[in-house]
Amino acid sequence: MAASKVVLLTVLVVVVTAVLSVPQFARDPHTSVPRYEFGYEVNAPEYGNDFAHAERRDGPDTSGQYRVLLPDGRIQVVTYTVSGDSGYVAEVSYQ
Image (tube, rainbow, N blue to C red):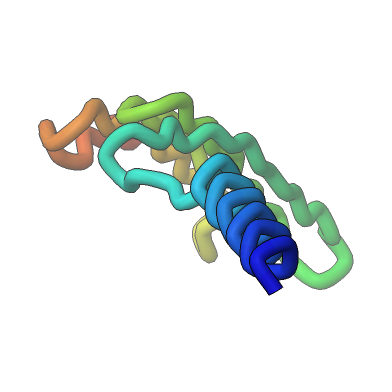
């Protein structure tokens, strides 16, 4: 009977130790560093479509550009940046 208690206690200690030593994979949203890059382009002159968008983010800094064919034939290009909490800063030009 005493031997079974020792075995049970040993198993319990091993299980508790194993559970406590498992690494935690929960991510702290304040320490994660978002990184991504994407883009697309549509150029179908037969339908009057010509537009694109590209963006890149590395941590708190984001930059990108998008363009669109306007009805009057000009192309509007918007280049933008966002750095942390500074807000959206855009430069608009026409080609």
